[in-house]
Every structure is written in C-alpha cells, then in structure tokens.
Length: 176
View: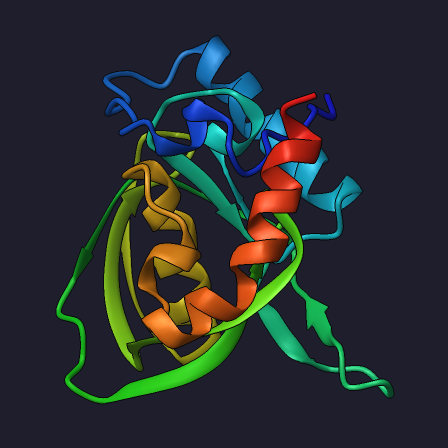
C-alpha cells in the first residue's frame, strides 16, 4: 500500500529505529508498503521511518545505467532488514543528494566511496555485499534514516547556510 511520506520537521524522521526481531506478516507488509511507496514517489530508496514505521528496514532501487536524459535507470527494489554497514573506504566521493522527505532541496555530501553491508532479506536469510559509488551512497543515505539522521546533517556548514532558508520554508509548510 502506498503510504504518505513524513517530511522534514516531522519528529519521526529523527527517531532511532528498532531492530526487527522476527520476520512476521506485519514486517512483510512494511516491506510491501516500502516497495509500493518508493515506486509511487519514483525514489532511488526509501527507509521505513519515512513512511511512519520505526523499524530498521529500507529499500534501495539501484542505478542500472542512465537513460538518454542522463537520469538513472532503477533496478527492481531490494529490501534490507537490520542493515549493518562495515569497512567504509578511506577514499571518498562528493555527490549531490536529495531526499523524498526533503523535496526540492539538494546539497553536496561527501561519503566513503565503498561500503560493505550485511543485512537480512524478507525470508530472514543473511546476505552481504560490497557496494561502491552511487549504490554505496544510496545505502548509506537510507541507513542514516534508521539512525534518525538526514543527509543535511552531513553537509558542510557553508552548504547548509545556503539551503537553510529553503529548509525553514519546507518545515513551516509541512507543519501546517
């Protein structure tokens, strides 16, 4: 089911999410809602707290190349349950990030170039993968949501100052 997004300023976006102890029908429904919602909102990823579920789960739709307009072509959604990020590379890259919960606002964020992730799938089976570049950024961005963090927390103060008026306007608009 498509769920409404929580927007910047909503206290739920700052909550640290609970670990999932068991894969129940309720948890499967959260995953289905994440997938339906990320498709509806045309996102590269979506974390459970962005749609009001405060559990450690997110979905990523990986970049599978670019279309003629240079936009990412997204792969089928992949669910990550209780993800743990390990072995961040010393090498970093800086890329503009945006967020479905902070619409219309983008800023440069520096993150590790590579990250190793361990998680569970919807059957409760563990899996792991080494990701790089855009995929790694996507996983780190979504995982931040599970810890109550937003990409705007990671930007340089000079960048933050530039977007602050837009953030204040968004917060005001979304709190009405």
